[in-house]
Picture 1 (tube, rainbow, N blue to C red):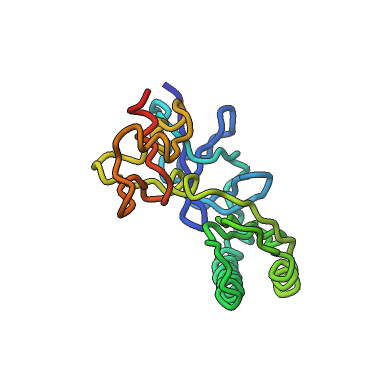
Picture 2: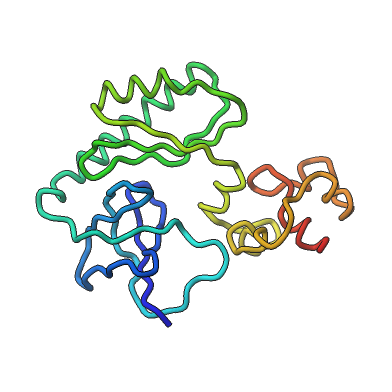
Amino acid sequence: MERNTYFILNDGFVCVAAKGSPQPPKHAELCVVEVDGMAEFARVIRNELCPRATGREPPHCVFLREAAPDERARLPGNFEAAARARTMFVKWMLDGAKPLQIVKLRFSVKRERLTLTVSVGVFVNFQPIFEALEKKFQTHVSAKITSPRDIAADVGGIGPCGCGFCCRNGISKITQAPDMATAKSQSMQMHDFAAAGVCGKVKCCASYELN
């Protein structure tokens, strides 16, 4: 048994303290954690002795400190800035009918960095919107491209079978990536998206059952 601390970030996603990370004080509410090299606000949602969750873990983070009073004063402004940045990005996306989806958008504590996670199926030139965001918020903007399957794994949920997503509970890690040939070998119907999971890709369980 080890002490595991789970945090919720400003965008609603969860992260877990990496092994060896300092532990927040038990009374801590608003904290500052480091995720992907960026200091972000987070709140403790679970801090107890328990076994690590099986399957896909949330992103790892490092607890830095309990938020200081001057940092707490920045939190409302960060929420407002994130909402305005999301509105700008969505308007740019809709105006150009761009085939992409914004998954995550959040500022660092001091708003010197803005990170976006997007899902896109074709090449998209992000330079115009990045320049507009950097000029508007006087910050550095970076983006990470993710896949529909990774989005489903990050968000989690219940599949049509009534069980948790295979990509979330770790089943898809021990099987080969499913494709249409895998679905056909399982006699899965090819019409009406019967072979597709919530992410729109071939269900992970097709590959798991084949093995």
